[in-house]
Length: 218
Image 1 (cartoon, rainbow, N blue to C red):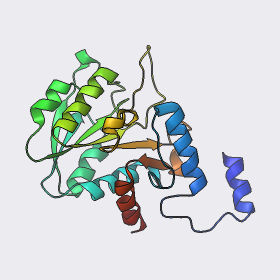
Image 2 (image 1 turned 180 degrees about the horizontal axis):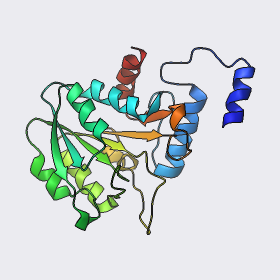
Image 3 (image 1 turned 60 degrees about the vertical axis):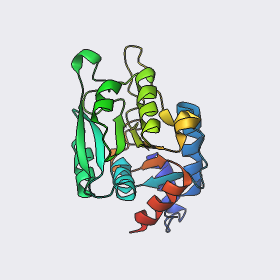
Image 4 (image 1 turned 120 degrees about the vertical axis):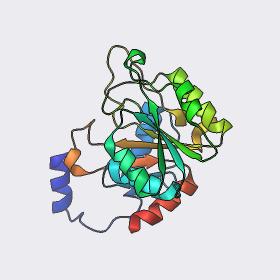
């Protein structure tokens, strides 16, 4: 990766890029999403690249959260999630995770937190900081809740490659019936040891990506 970047710079590849990211990179991300996640994504309209998954999450929250909107967040959680939601005026509702459940999200706990103000469910599987993996059956039940209550799902899948003891990863956006309400977040940082390179990406429906791209410019 380092050698490819050095060659690109020496070859003059040092100019402005499209706000959504270089198309060839978005095409590579779309191929990765299809191969590893089962997600069909149009690289021109449904994929965006930003300086790290952290900024990508910020763009998602700024695009979708209005003051007073409630977001269901697993607890323990990555502190950035809470801060970004609150920066947008959102209200965090904590879905407590249990060690007895392997720190997986419990659909019954999620259901108990849904109110008329709920806007979004944030899923982080595999989890930072617990490493817990929420099984496919539970993710589908959470997706059904989101569909029933017309909620958005943000699925942070940055740690997708870190699976142990036979655990399997599942992406909600691979199901066509939940595809349009799900924003999938990924990153090169952990899988490819590229933390300092700041390469994160998101996949969502074209309307959401269009608005995130406009915000990204600013």
